[in-house]
Image (cartoon, rainbow, N blue to C red; front, side):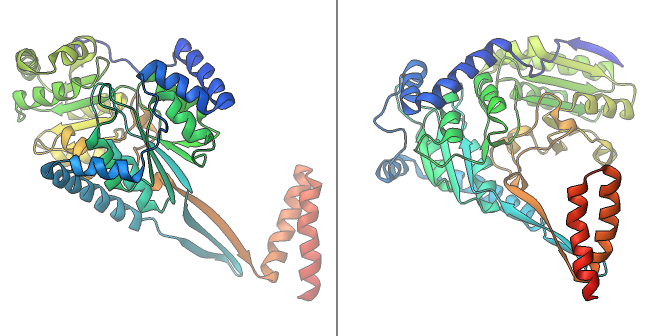
Amino acid sequence: MRIYKNGGHRLFENDAETAQVVSGMLLDLEKNGLDAVRKYSKKFDNWEPETFELTNAEIEKVLSSVDMQLNEDTEFCQMNVRRFAEAQFKTLLPLEIETGKGIILGHRHIPVKSVGCYIPGGRYPMFGSAQMSIIPAKVAGVKNIYAFTPPVAGIGYYPATVNAMNKAGADRIFILGGVPAFAMMAFGMGVVEPVDILCGAGNKYVAEAKRQLFGRCGIDLLAGPTEILVIADESADPALVACDLIGQAEHDPNSGIALVCLSERFAAACLNEVENQLESLPTKNVARISWKNNGIITIAEDKDEAITISDDYAPEHLELHVMDKDYFFERLTNYGSLFIGEETTVAYGDKCIGTNHILPTSRAARYTGGVWVGKFLKTVTYQRMTPEASVQIGKVTQRQCDVERMLAHGITAKVRVDRYGKKS
């Protein structure tokens, strides 16, 4: 293995200063409620409306302002996301099995009651994020979905985002950003029902708020800067690979950008393409920093080493620009979402192909996948028995409890052995 260029991919790490700031804000927000929300919203976003929730009339006004093409494209994207989520939901079947005579065990999938969905703004108004959290939650059967998005300076809110939130099925829509938004979702503040799960990405303060609120409610995952890794062999087009690498680099100066290839020739060609394409890229001010600081090109000895390198990196997005696609598909294990062949690209998954774009970063793909319909379901178990089976299980349970010295537990078993044993 040879590292051709290494800017050092930055992992999402604990930041003591950010943690302290967020902790202080959350304490203030929980104690002082809407007064604190208004204070921080004015301070950070210069946004202090009479109410942060949009009325039905305001939503209708927004919808009427969205042009027909945007409406059709949003519906197309959301249709794909919904179809895939519905197909995923159909795989989640209830289970009931008789493990022994009279011993019936099972599980059910029960949706959580309420979800808070955050649709980020910031550098880019990523209105497509609305369907990635709201639609899977709706398909799962969540009753109350509260959607929040930050205000837009000088505008108030971005019509395309409100339109997408509404079409995706949000029950209530709020224009509020950052830590205050997550505090309102988690604490309720008399405005909403405190949610069971917080969902959605944002800046480092948003990520830290989710980290600190986890336990009070669930979260989808902790997402750091976005990532792409491309595996390419000699059959790949260096210009297309370079295009995809810097396409992801525009997200953020800390984006992770990696290429694993199999030859010095391809590495040099791709590096040259990246530098050339950056010159004319409209968002080069961000993408160039990301590439300079975090770009990595690694030359693997063979396909197996390429797979090992990729699995160790565990990227959020993984693209395969290779001849033997099946070989890699069958062996790769650590990624958020896989894009097989040059015909597809990360932007398709981000926007409209149907798979979810809320994905694990910072090597979290080693142990979790991204957001999907199952994220909003609790798989709960149940047991049912005949009296005869209760006697059988009760005798073993009592002996186990005696060994563990958990005598009260043992008594609960013994009373059933005595009760049902006499009857039988």
